[in-house]
Length: 404
Image (cartoon, rainbow, N blue to C red; front, side):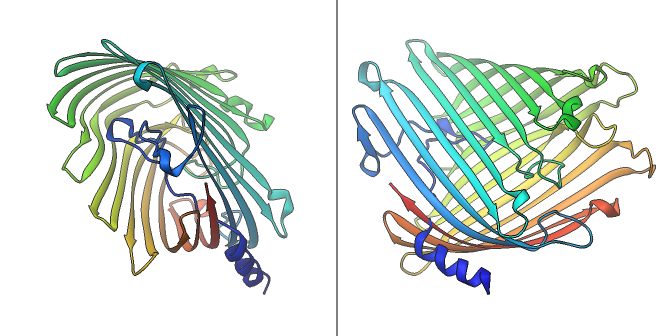
């Protein structure tokens, strides 16, 4: 069996990147974790710069590559994932730092070669520690056709970029952070030109130091949404949230925010969103060998489906990493996404409702400090009130990671 041969090959030559170090102050719920506490003993130093790198080779079997409700097509996919992280402290007492994180997923299909893909991410972060606070610049560039966290069931090539500027002013237990973000999304396929847009986001966040490692926060956001070729989709929103950030329980770090959003579009015929919004990201070290991660999002997202300007996304996910005997560990994941659309489908005359379930289970073996191997199974199912949008998919993957 071709997959079995590839499984054995990948187990011999391939690798899974272990996460880079982070601190509570550097935790971001959007998944970007870049910290100032990179462990130099586990990295390569060139001058003041410290580097970490990994290369993962994986062989994956997918029984429904097109996420179709009927006539599913299966294939075997080879995925190569290089990652490189650089941390460069500078200034007096190395109080400032420059960081880069590059990662890519390069997928090659055995039979359906036209589906081959290249997803690339590059994150840059520049931190300045000031006498009265801090100043930071961050940029995330993504060239991808990944369907995760989108409404797409087919690969759609696009470029996304988000740039952030943050200025924090600190005084005793009080702090205020002013932020500006510019987000753009551009589709390579001309049939999606009308969905190209950019967003300006202005943020003001007040912090109060409740405990030595925990801050309370009050955050206000104002966003402007501008489409380049379809001005009927333009709009804006106001959002306010309360929350906590930092070391929340002694064993749990993270951030939790909840509040209200008012989202309106310039065209009166397009429904806006008014309601609850929330964001949560937690990492709990329950024991030396047990780590639990949790995330939750409830917000309005720009829609690519029909005449819907947005959809309400409720997303919850957990990941449990449990050390076993010796160098073995088991990783279990579970997530559910509930997507609610405000506009009726123009042909079916119903409002679309999707519930997407994903469960995964994997086992990893840390053979050496520089190499580990893993096997993972994932099942995903979309329950939709529109039959053609429903699908089921199973994936089985074997991987090996080499780390520097």
